[in-house]
Image: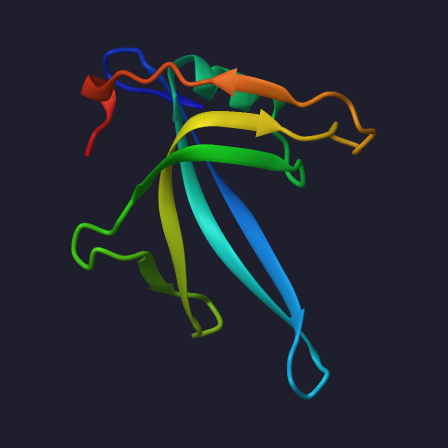
Amino acid sequence: MRYTPSGTPVTNFSVAANQRWTDQQGELREETTWFRVSCWGKLAETTNQYLSKGRQVLIEGRLRPDPETGGPRVWTGNDGVARASYEVTALTVKFLGSPQDRGTTPFEAPADLNEEEVPF
């Protein structure tokens, strides 16, 4: 977590959405779409406290396109393969299950977003 010059907390993290299917040749295929998520205010504090790698979450928010292309942010990975990710400003983060997936009740952290603080 970091803070803006005016003291507003900000937390950034990435979320992978995996899609699996069997193609026409019967081979299992997988595609991963990455989302870079920004949380602000109380939501940033909550996600910083409770979110950990591998924890399932449901994110509701605003999709922010790349200002130059209008689409996802595109980059080249260390392996030379082109990749893309979408930028999202979270309005709600729902924690699904527990960190060990014990099936606890989902916790919903509401957004405390001040539009004046968003740097874009």
